[in-house]
Amino acid sequence: MDQLDRAQQENELHLGLQLKHRQPTLQPKGVCHWCDHPTEPSAQFCSTACRDDHAQYERKNGLRG
Image (tube, rainbow, N blue to C red; front, side, top):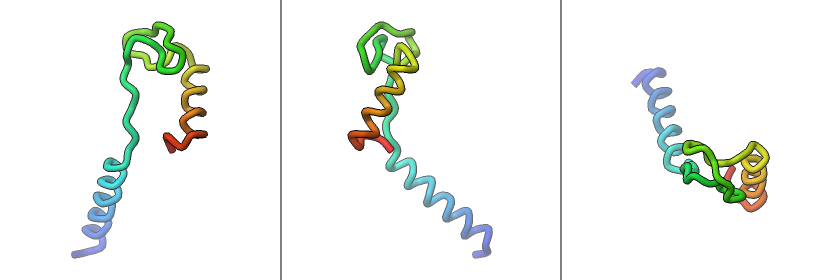
């Protein structure tokens, strides 16, 4: 096994670990995940303020990295 093979194997290991431990993403539900106001069909939040508040809450409570 040469150096390139080992590097590729290490990259695959790291990618596999990252995928295994990734956080689930929020799915659009028609209302804001933070304040429950109606949103566009493909949006998770009604505004950037709600998105930022939600992210800050999750960071403070150890829910996301």
